[in-house]
Length: 373
Image 1 (cartoon, one colour):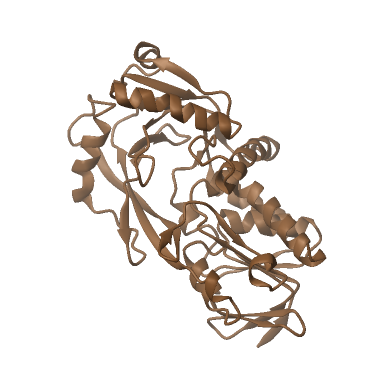
Image 2 (cartoon, one colour):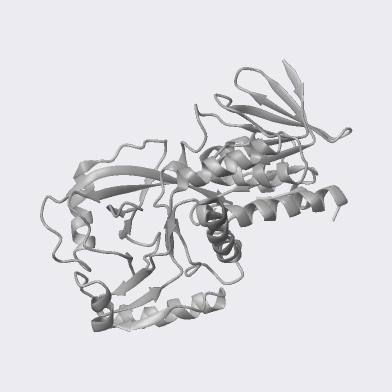
């Protein structure tokens, strides 16, 4: 079966929904294809629901730019739509003189990204804010927050549908094709339904690389490899004694095992970093001892047997020419020569925070494609 439409958005996670809402509000006819039974059931349902400030990313990177602008957009959107959130703040804690020196470097990087509200705290001042904390010093990030990510996605889907977009679930994309003479794309789902359209936005998260690579016309230089990094989370059985998020000084592959709280005040710890070859969201309970060791560096009073397996998420990272890419990747016509196709790859954290800014970025890319810019 073959159908006609103007624009197909692949993937109904938070970024895909934000893109669909943006494009539909600009007057485009949008169909959202989702492989699973419902929207937002993949990576978007398996994150820490943190609104990031934009502290750690390389200055000038897409992550830095889109996180900082996306944070502002997201707070305003939540206020306008009555979506639950809390600007609770975050402490980045050091546990040695060497790590205290790193805090100043982190603040400098944040300043380079336009995040100018970080405050260096002594150990006494940090512990005055969080009495259970033990540290040598800390950075306070007052603009970090938490959000009800499901409510956000419900709102974005409502925005898209109110402007005529349609969500089609149980529709994994099997293949893409491009007709260079007509500029038309064919998006074929697993049930052999084909959508012929002018624009394709690939925001499929973990599946985005495979979908991009399925296009025969994609230049070899843009063919990448998916690299999945699993993050496991454990939650606290008892009530949390913390009112702010607590992060250790970042490590090589992530931000370390940090403490986040949800809007109900429940404490969760994670993620750790586990390279995986397939999607598996189970949490191995034997990993808990490494969590106790990491958490007790800043909360030594954590009781024994007080952690329980909670959930896991997978970061959809990307390898290009043997190198793990650290930034968001957007390939449009200026890269692959096919106006109307945008592949969004490696959209991991801070994708939730940046979703509204990513949607604007993609809409502008699409506009430039059409104009041949």
